[in-house]
Structures are given as C-alpha cells and as structure tokens.
Amino acid sequence: MRNRLFHIIVFGALFSVWGTVWANDAREANKAYEAGDYVLAETLYREAIEADPENPKLYFNLGNALAEQGKTQEAMEQYLEFRARAESADEKAMAEYNMGTLLTKNEDWDPAIAHLKSALKLNPSDEDARHNLELALAKKEEQEGENQQQNNEDQPEPSEYAKAIKQRAEQLVEQRRYKAAYQLMQEALKSDKTVSAFRDFTERIKNVAEIDEQ
Image (spheres, rainbow, N blue to C red):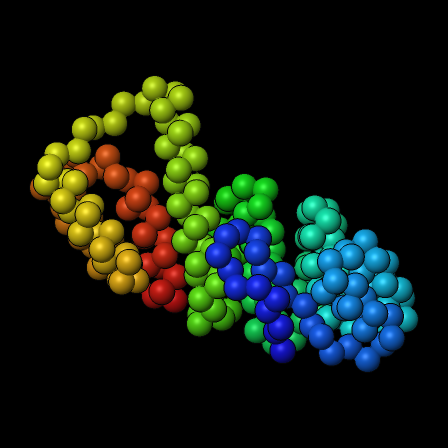
C-alpha cells in the first residue's frame, strides 16, 4: 500500500503517497505531487476530499503536500485526521511515522520521538522508523549536551575504563544489540561512577532497547 518516493538518509526525506485513487482530482493531485508542484497538489487533494470525504487516503496525501510546503501545523492536522479514520495498524503506523519524521525537521525532538516510538509499536519491522528514532534520540542528546555546556554544568571526567566501556557499547549499538549495550553501561556504572559522563548516550540506547522489547 505504501509507495515510498525516497529512501531515508536524513530527517524528513520520506513522505509516503498512495498512487492509486479513483477520483480524477486525486489522480491529478498525485501527478502534481510527484512533479513537485505541492501547491497544486494541495488544491487538488482538497477538491478530491470535497468529492469523497470518507476516503482516508486523501487526508494522508493532503498532509504530505502540506508538509512539503512547510505547513507543519496543517499537515499534522491532516495526519491526525487520517489516523482517526485508519482501520489497520499499518495505516496508523504510517501516520505516526510521517508525523514523527515531520517533527524532526522542526527539531521538536520529544514529540517526534513519541510518534516514532508509536510507529514502531504498531509496525516493529519498519526500519525507516527505527532509523529516524535513533537519529532523533541522538540529536536530542546532542542538543541537551550543548545546553549543559552553556549552563556550565559539571560532568565527571570519564576514566580510561569508562571510555573503553562506551566504545564497546557503541560497537554493540552498531550491531543493533541495544539491550546488551545498555546493560553493559549500567553494570560499568556500578564500579566506576565516571561512566555517568555518558548518561545521555546510555539513556538513548535505553529508549531504543525498550522499543525492541515491546
């Protein structure tokens, strides 16, 4: 059902669009969207909704056209409308995914993370959602680190042991063994308090590990 236009490599690279809608306005809207004419696509999707207001796919596609124009609030409203009308878990996951991905573009990390987590709960096999969740968590960690520096917050200087443990945990993360990485950091913290210097990293992998367990 989902026709992915691009592979995700950065935030916001993907907004899914259905290519099979029977109303003429919707077909023309899809063509305009694929051609990059998002203003025309928006107009045509709105006309299609007037003609077929019970078709949930039209709200989703309208959300995509609005998102591409930077109309975040309006796009979110359409995704929420689609989610309310969607019947399957996969369709609800698509709404959650696009909302989360869109919010990352505005660096709204907390709601973005929440929606991406919801997308994974509904569709645990969605690697794009997992990828974006990992990036959102990393970006939030980076932002929080910058804020901590600005506030001159004291952090312990990590020992060589702590650095080695984090290096090993990063290797586990590369293997997508998030639970093992988190447990390694937690165990090391018991014997070396300077491991707390990496608490943002530890919290990030904990969040991903919790998703894998659900």
